[in-house]
Length: 320
Image (cartoon, rainbow, N blue to C red):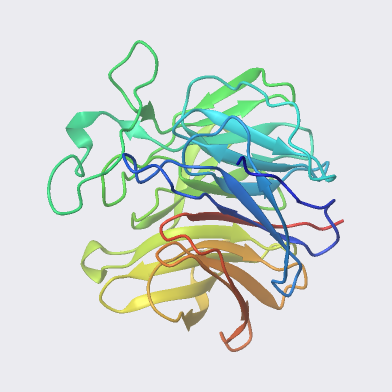
């Protein structure tokens, strides 16, 4: 029996969560693409089973027209869902591992390339954390990707390539894995997941800007998620496998941490600041839990289960 979507038209405050059902025994990143719809209190409303995806779906974000975007970086698929809950005109942006987007007021689309390098920098081909999936090479190459940022027009025409610095993260091959744009839209803030930098690229001057923040390698601090709130505040999830995971509020200019809350256990890797500015939605990649957290005291005030481990890879809230 095939999966049947029962997603509803988006309503103000709805929370959309990417949680692919990983049901391919030969590939632990592959399965049926799924976007779950909750209300703002994390009550289940419906499910969209994505078309034209084969692996982990993530990177959820709404554009200026209230369309929801999502990505399958391993089969080069960009998903677009209308406010009616219907998957619509999928644009072919080319055979690159795009996994995240920013949208400018002028209609430009900035796409981040998830993968960088080749087998020489893949630290997960062997060893105790061996990757149980095959990363694709770009057509006619032996490279996973270039880890760049790309500017496209709204109809998919490539306008600019920004040769961004990347870190590689713990496995070595992670490029631009998450991105966010501040209100002045002059810079794209981005990370290589599980690296120690929050990078910035000036898209007006077309040059690498100073890091927003760089953690000392000996600290063990790594960045796993970033986002701006609707009022311009900037947040990140900091991972430290000795000290634990925490939600950090940063000064958006200096990067200095002004507030920090410890999170309940490891694995929190998806982040969306709620439209009310008083709470945050976070997803736990390890166990599939969705949580709503109070930004005043860090307490979890609502939760839901996606019932899939190592799958939850994106959260976005609809503001109608």
